[in-house]
Image (tube, rainbow, N blue to C red):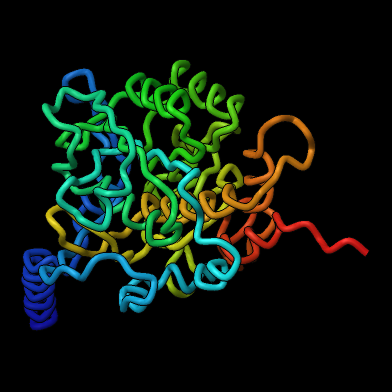
Amino acid sequence: MKKLEYLAISLTLVAVILVAVSVHGLLPVREGVLAYGYTSVYNAIYVKSSDSTNYDLTPEVAYSLEGSYIAERWGISKIEVPQAWQITRGNQSVIVAVLDTGINKDNQSLADRVVAEVNFTGSPTSDDLYGHGTHIAGTIIAIAPECRLMNVKVADDRGRCEPSVVARGIIWAVDHEAEVINISLAMEASPDLEEAVNYAWSQGAIIIAAAGNRGRSEPSYPAYYSNCLAVAGTNQNDSLSLLSSYGDWVDVAAPGFNIYSELPHDQYGYKTGTSSAGAHVSGIAALVFSVTEDSNGNGTVNDEVRWAIESSCVPIAGVDVENGLVNAFQAVTKTIPPPSS
C-alpha cells in the first residue's frame, strides 16, 4: 500500500515539475520542436517555425566582424567561418533570396542589405511579423557579411504557406538574379514546386533547403528534390540536433541548435531547428559563389559551389547524412586553383 502511495506522490511531483518548466519556457513545446509539421488550414499548409525561441531583450550593436556576437554564435566558429574570411567575406554581387515569413525592416543590421522584396502572401506587408525569416537572414549575413539579401515573403504572418506559392517565389527570385535561395520550410511534394526547383538549378542558382524537424528519415520537400541541397541540424557536440530529420537523402549537416541571430524590432534570440542549419549553409554558399569560377565550361557555377560544399564536409560519427558537417574554410579553399608549377 505504501509503495502505491509513494508512486502516486512521485508521479504528482513529476507532473508539477513538467508544468512549471514548460510555463517558464525551459521545455520545448510540441509546436516549437516539430518545425515543419503541417496541417491543412484554409487550403494552406501550416508551416510551423523550425525553432523554439528565447528572446534576448538587450539588443546588440549593429553587425561588426569584430563584435562580441561571435561568442554567442557558436556555429560560426564550429564551421570555421572566421578562417574562411581570410579568403573572402562574400561580395555585393552575390544575392541570397530568403523565402520565408519576410525580413523585418526595423532591424538595422539587415534592412540596408535587402536589395529587392516581394510579397506572395495575403499579408498586407512584406515585413516579418512572425520572426522566422529575420532570424534566418541574420544567420546568413553573419556568415557572408558582404552579400546582399532578397526578401521573398512566401509564408504569411502565421507561418502558413502553400507549395505553389513557394514555387512562384523561387521563380521570381531566380528571374531577379538570386544565386543562392534559402528555403527553411518543409511541405508536401508538388509538381509546381519540383519544376521551380529544377528551373532554378538550370539557371545557375542553388537552393538550400532545411531537411525538417520530424526526427526521422521520412523525406520532406523541397529538400528531397535532387536539385536542392538538403540540410540536417547538429548541436555543439556534433550530434544530430533535437528532432532533426536525417537519412541518405539529406546531403549535409550544419549547426542547428540554440542558434543566436536577429529577431524583429532589433532584438536577438536563440532558435533551434534545421531552419538555422540551412541558413548556415546558405551563408557558406554565398561565400563560395564570391570566389568560384566555371571550371567545366557549362556556363554556370552552381555545380562547382555545390561540389565545394559537399566535398569539403567533415565526417561526423552517428549522424545519418550523405556527407558530413559543412566547413566554410575548406569549401572556399576548394574553389581556389592550385598554383601553377
